[in-house]
Image (tube, rainbow over all chains, first blue to last red):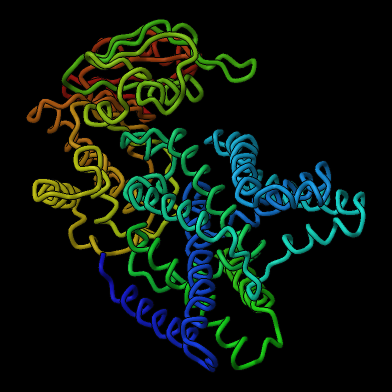
Length: 314
Length: 250
């Protein structure tokens, strides 16, 4: 389990984190540590939440190309936010404590994800193509509904949504940081607890059932975890389309085996390296010339295409 | 003993199984035979709880399928499904080691390692144990999967078409191994086979299915006759007796 790949990534991540904290510091150390420290925690948290949710989704869908964001999970999150601004008005919405909004959104997201994707995964003999297509159509539907909702409300209220519906790594919503930290650490502890069961689930319904796993029950639990992790990352930085796919594919490439005990930490470390390292480079070296999300989505989208084409050839 | 009472199964308007009541004896090898689409695999999948029971009841000794702890059943009964597709990259050894999961929950103890080594040896997979499954031929991959079912070390072994993809030597070796498990380790083997000759040669008990129902059951020598082939399989083949066992001329 303690593989070389994990140690190397951990070391790289440490280097990135130290650079992130110390490059070009001015003023009092206390302020710098607090200001950048919070951001560092948020980036690491987002990385781990995105990589773990992607990995879990790929395990229950048994496909290495699908991710929660391709299936429209984060679009659903944005839609829920838009609808609540639409119905409550931005004044009413902003008066609510962000923690309450976040928790309610998480609960709604979990319920919606179970209703939509639970039935899809429940038919264990259903073919993958139908699932992918359904997911993509859901994603488009959620985005269109969000766009529709946005057009219906007045421009001032739109600003409230706009901030929340684009990926942003420079202005992380730190209000929710502590609550997200608690929720995602709990979710990830649960994933770690399930790691051996996840290995069995990856073998498919028939074999996993034959080995004594209650597959449908586990899929429901895992969908809840995915919804929770997606909610955390989307609340903190907004929707990031291809980061999950990028880091999980990289983890599979360097991992010596596909056990979850290896993949979960490795993917989280790689996600940390991409986010913290990328943010350091863009903030300190390129002076914020390009947003990190653009770079991540560009590279991630490229990896997606390469994987797709390679799969088509074999 | 596996007892199946009044099992029916429908998909849409098609009735796949119609009120099947049958008892599969404990010990020995029972073969399910019948024409394509007779419901053999569906019956086996129900016993292994791969399909939900719509009406009827199945029990494996004292465990009622569908109402008992799935992991308790996994220590009693193992199934080799007909089609297996792998999404993950696994080595042969990892694959076979999954057979120990019901006993070890993923933490392999030394007895599990011994059992895995034994399974690899029994199927001649020891030289291939570190190869990835996707680098093997269909037949070798199939063997690895049978080895995993073997490593599960359950009282009951259900195999759905285990001879697919296997050449004559591998098929005979597998049947001989299953025979040995039934005779010397007290296992109960239930097997779905298409080749009646393999069934007649190796099984103790035949259950013949037709159109979702049990047509007849009994010893191969009594059952495999010209009349059976005409009635159930709808073909006019000649049956010879060779060394006291029936043999269907192809």
